[in-house]
Length: 492
Image 1: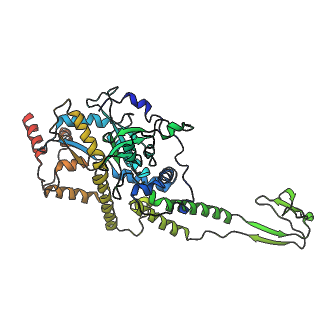
Image 2: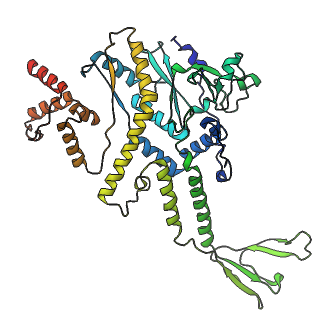
Image 3: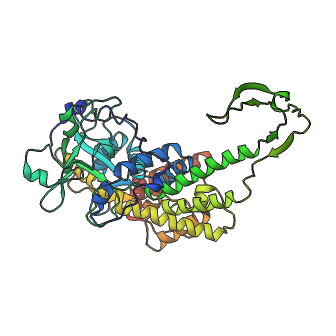
């Protein structure tokens, strides 16, 4: 892997600045209703740009979609990485090198490893897939392991690209949906749009329109949830809810207009003599109802609170639109429940409506929601992202440091339940039954044995050491805890 620092200036530096939401349309439900037999990516190709454009439009502009995305990403959290030896002990050197990288993993210097994982989740939510390029960057990189990541928006990987600009006919034949596959249908090369193609006002020539930047698949992290066999492009999480969300938007817009009309009062006056009428408002113009109408009519408007005077013989009729009634809230609740089911987010979490939910019901819903989050970590984020990232990190670190015996161990974030006391008691029971270690439970709470020890020392110095005593039923002590305690006692 060569140093690609200089090539960054000519690859994806401008970013996606073109309007990504031109495809968003209120009549989505009337288009793209086609189902036929083909592989998953070919079917998606027919409407992929529409799906991505509308998904990003809703995620940015629709409050329900925006709230669902933010809550989902917040609950997902970030998976921690701890480097251990085969014996289960911490590998201090590798952990130190990884922490350096994790504090600043991206080539653009934005955020840390937690920010990186959140970006992956946001990209996958909106566009269906997250893409990162692994680079060796030596310039202005103080880390000892020179690995950096470059996040790439999925629109740069054109699903319609079939390699027509490639001179190698064999590679062209194996290129589809923006990816060149090897003889075993495994990704070999990813083909991205060149720099500036999406720039606002860009006018690429005929060559640039078909030219792509090839990147070896081994340098790409392509994170998406596979829903069908042989699928290689991700489908936006928000896609199944597009029609419902647009329907809700249309319904609310029409309802507001109807309510405004209901707040207004109109009247119809049949006049015996139009010229004798003394309007309370301002006369506009004399006009005709139809082009060939020889009889002119006076058109006028009045202001609120004005008095309208009529002549003898005039007929006066009030007209007021009907109110929206009490059916809207029920329909909106039904549609919102459909959206929540599609997202996999509890309805009450999306709406704030807990009516009719018992304590046990909420707890059961949260457990089911937690299963979904852990599934995504197990089957998407870790195998597609962290596994490949840690493998590349170790391969580079081995070139300069003795870290052959270091292995990554992943820790899930802590998912808070309804009753914190019961959750804590459950954690203690897991430790006592040997189903988890105290290190794992401390990791979920973002703390370490050393932090706890130092806190207790400070408590003793302040004379409040009795306030935070351990419970009388002591949990089994892990091997790492024993080792740490022995080291502390020997140092004292």
